[in-house]
Image 1 (spheres, helix red, strand yellow):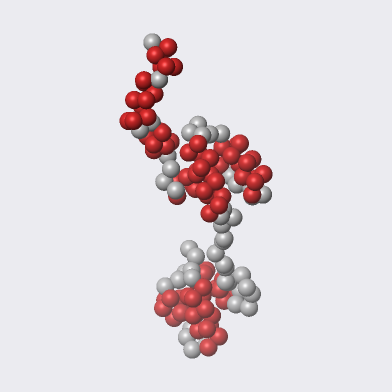
Image 2: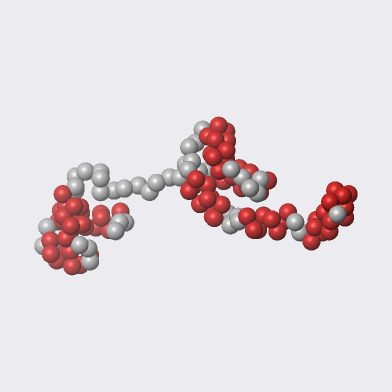
Length: 134
């Protein structure tokens, strides 16, 4: 389990003050012994304070993925990965692409509904190409 930097600072302050025993601090902060001793061991190192990861996927990349997928319903993710690498110089994985689509609430079914709304469907059936098929 990861703990916030604020909690780690409080633990370190209590360790340095030496007001409480190790067991009292473990019980008070409700952490495991391993976690406590790991914090105590690395008290002078910057390993304790971990920064959150920043995403390499910017909003421009997200909108690019969204536009590409809405234009190409049956898209090839490898081609999309190559295009993102070429245009933005960022390597992304298949999972990242599908995570972006999930975050933007884009599904194949929703895209098809937008493209073939009732008006467009009627126009499609009235077209000359459709009559040739019959």
